[in-house]
Image (cartoon, rainbow, N blue to C red):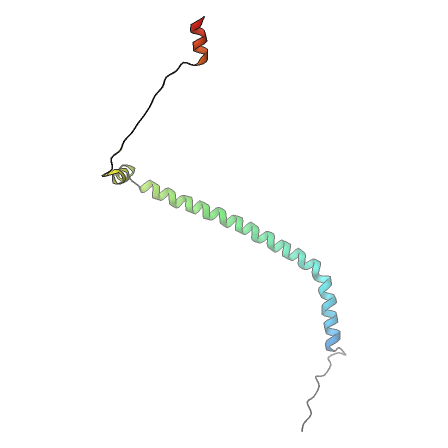
Length: 105
């Protein structure tokens, strides 16, 4: 049987040494990564705010366009057609206190 060859070491490093370097390099890069994540989150937040404003503006423009095309009189006629409308009102007129005092003098 042929023996499997072990991978040759490149420049005297083995897997353990490589993992150690990656681990220690990763720890040193944590602060850089945190800064990058913070910048990324801030950028995303700004983009979300901008998009939200654009969406609200577009919706407002669309609603405005729809409302400008609506014939309110025709719409109201459709809504109240066949309905009986009953209106009750009570009106009471009273003098303000100042007026009452002046009349008594």
